[in-house]
Length: 131
Image (cartoon, rainbow, N blue to C red; front, side):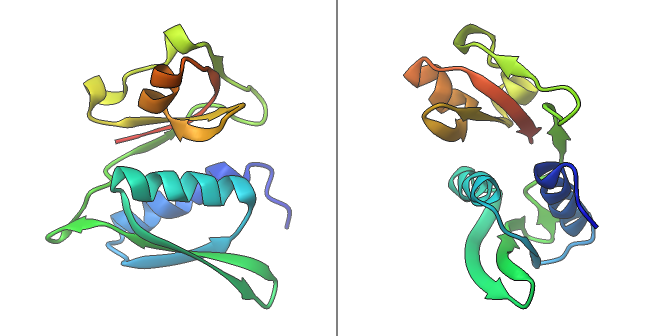
């Protein structure tokens, strides 16, 4: 089965794992997914990201961050979808949950948080919002 929105699938798997209080999850890997996962580690939503090779190709193993028994990650919203891409310029980068969350943006300089994109003065495709 071909997935039409691999990043959306990844975000859904992470959200479901957090809701089910799972410690780790595995999913098919890609360069964009690795970049998003590494940003989530930097922002503190994930503990670690490991890349390995499974029987069906590259696999990404993610470990979720918990505060006691509750997951740090409480919500994910996919903004730019394959059917409707959502681009923002540097002045329109949203502050997620009043600055408590993170906007993930794919820019010409790579995948970065909205805060970093604002600092560098670049816009791009608003992939998702996480809080």
